[in-house]
Image 1: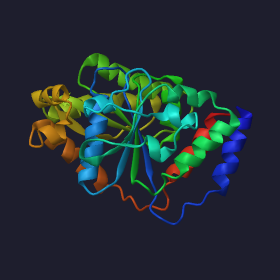
Image 2 (image 1 turned 90 degrees about the horizontal axis):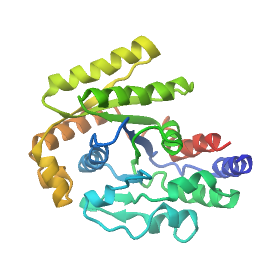
Image 3 (image 1 turned 90 degrees about the vertical axis):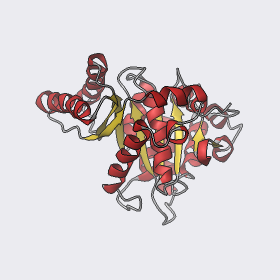
Image 4 (image 1 turned 45 degrees about the horizontal axis):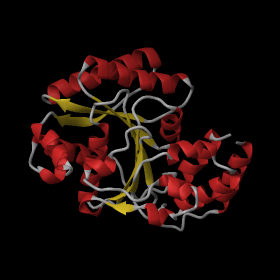
Length: 289
């Protein structure tokens, strides 16, 4: 691992950001499965794209990779083909709904933890090319805190934790925040409350998590927004069409679009202080030591 980290450090240090826009790295996770995390990730990305931003979704869920399934696409290549040098980064990027760029999930993310120095150099060289190509790279991780998920949470600029108002979902969402915090890492968490009956329920759910986090962990957990419970979502999943496309005027689609508008109000993509892909790789390098 030490050799891997050294190789990545050398590569990152000699790269230039080329003076263009900086790519922001976001990780989306959840404490438990079944809360609609991947659906939220996909439709958040599409809503960002509808606002004029270029987005790439990276399916980093090892066990239940399904971003491509939600779009009705059969993926030909994934990260595994990149790590084995069978394909370049550009060859594994596929086009999904509304021409959204995405990289399909697979066993490649597990392989990322066991790369040789040469393979790690190739991975870093390829991923570095994405800086400035898109405004956002969004990693959709697996539920719970696996070693792989932890690395993406720590390397990203911010992490969205998706939960629902159900007590078990709330408990598990708080648990993942607590576990990361207990490791001494400073992570920018934001809450997305999915499947709420109304904004009042969403706010009450978010306030519960934020209050406990402040009281027992001493950290602030802001709320990014709420997505309303809507039968149109399950209909869209069955059609394998994202709900913001299949039912753009549905409650879920409108609340998701509103969430995205609120998000970009507080963020400007052209931000020289953002570490971008280079910062992401630097953090990943430290985690591989």
